[in-house]
Image (cartoon, rainbow, N blue to C red; front, top):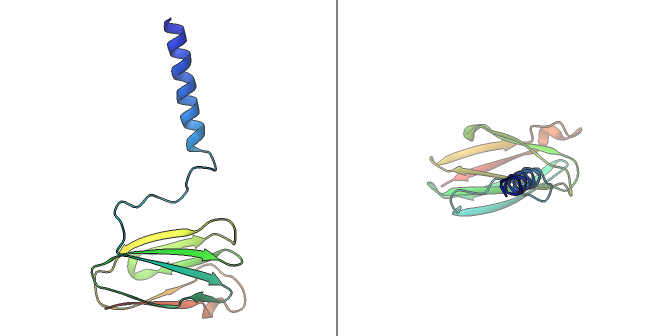
Length: 127
């Protein structure tokens, strides 16, 4: 009887380990709190759409980024964020931050993506 229990336990343990590495498991972190504002940004050579975003001071903002072509970067230095946006069809990037201070905060593509890479910029305006 003990042998049966150990074998079942081992199978359950192995199954949970395999499931955690499965491509079906969400790769994006589950948010701890619900954001006040969710913004979808599309990255495509050599623009972010939208490139100007207005948010309210104190709000929890979630930005969902997707690419229409190759992989791009998303750098928002004021929030210490520098992540890679996966290429088209390979997923999305989700980031969250709290808009603590009013002002204008630039963001840019941080992964060289071609001749117009330096033009790929945007701005978050906290009001």
